[in-house]
Every structure is written in C-alpha cells, then in structure tokens.
Image 1 (cartoon, helix red, strand yellow):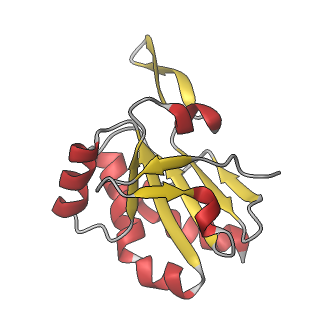
Image 2 (cartoon, rainbow, N blue to C red; image 1 turned 90 degrees about the vertical axis):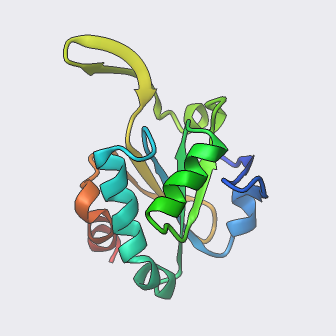
Length: 146
C-alpha cells in the first residue's frame, strides 16, 4: 500500500515533502504532544539510535499537532537531530488515520493515536506500529523488519 503523500513545513519552516524521501526508508511517527513523558521517551530513543538508523538507511520524521515553536523548543531541549513536522491543522494526521476519538479516565476526546509507519524506498508502507514501546521503539522497529 502506498504511503499517503504530503507537503508540509518542518519545525524551522523549511518546506518538506514525503516524495523527496523516495529512495530512502522513512520512519514516520505520530505522537500526541511535545515534552510529555511518553513522547519524550520515544523521541529520545530515536535520538539515541539515530546513527544506527542512518547507517541502516532510515530517516526519522516526527509529526504532532504542536506548533513550530513548540517543536523547536522540544528539539532543542532534548537535542533531537531529526525533523519534526507541526501539523496544527491535522491534515497529515487525518491522511494517515491517526487522529480521532480517544478515551482517558472515562472521558472521550479527539487526539493523536501514537502510531509509526515505516515506509520503504519505493514509497510503500512496510509496517505499521500501533502498539508503540516508547522506551525502545527503535529496537521494536528493527526487530520487526530485519
């Protein structure tokens, strides 16, 4: 199945398109909110394993509905060396079907379902992770794909 294509700006306002990554493997991960415990653990796991992922031909892109300023602060605070995409209008989140009803403490609200899509060099989705182990997500991905 082909990964839905999108165009957006990264946390620094630079234009970015998924099609520009054709020929590389992409870890496109969706997370609820910058600087929260689970999201920080997941981002830092990618940060700590970034060289390993690069060596294996992967590029990491993180998407949440946070603002560019929030992403810049989050990336700076934790020295994240990969791209974060602010999706304040939730267009990419909806394209990938990861925005919708969630339940927490008996309340139902709309939010991001933490999900990772691994996209192959040909632009097709290789694997979808909807049960993400935030503390060791890199290992979870590599184990499933190798």
